[in-house]
Amino acid sequence: MGGIKKSSEELKELYINVLSIFETLNINFILFYGSLLGYYRDSNFIEGDDDVDVLVSEEDFNEIFSNLKLIRMKNPLITFRYIGYKDKPGFYEKNFVQVYYKDIGPFDICAYTLEKNHILTAFDNLRYHIKDIFPLKQVYFKDYKINIPFNTEEILRLTYGENWRTPQKKGIDYDPHRIVDHIRDFSKTRNVDHIRDFSKTRNSQKLLSYNLPKIFIKRI
Image (cartoon, rainbow, N blue to C red; front, side, top):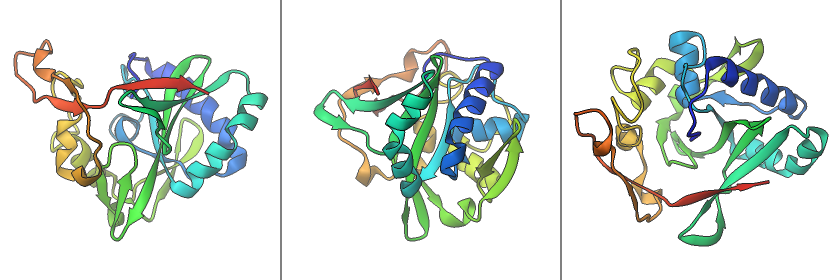
């Protein structure tokens, strides 16, 4: 959820600097979404991707959130932003925060919850089987230790479809929201009134529209 496309070097700079700041908190970051795809398929961040994506447990997310002001004081080049909803004044996403380093970002941190045999991502309500996530595997990526899911290929198949090994353009070759509807928990999806229509993209193939919330970013 980043907007502006970035080079793989910019994403690496963001990744390294943010992880270095959180080292003392011993947070178990799980590389996920496009960052996991880049690591596993390309051994690099995807050129032109717009953010770095990680998941954390609710406990780790609370630890991060309780230390935001202290981290900000010690690291003036770091800023935090979180999501607010225009149709819900005063309501802010409590399980999702974006980190920026020198205005490069975001480094998206999304909490997950455990529900029986699944984990549920808090921001977009995607459901993955716990056996595909745990036990986590620790890897070195860009000189830093980070976790990846136990069954990375299955996670990528569920998130990006059967053709995940083939590079595709988000919003042109596929609708990044519709492609995960099969693992989305719609019972937890908010009522929204904003429609983003991917059929208006440059690609002649019409893609399905998807309801997205009207949101704004608040800087911390």
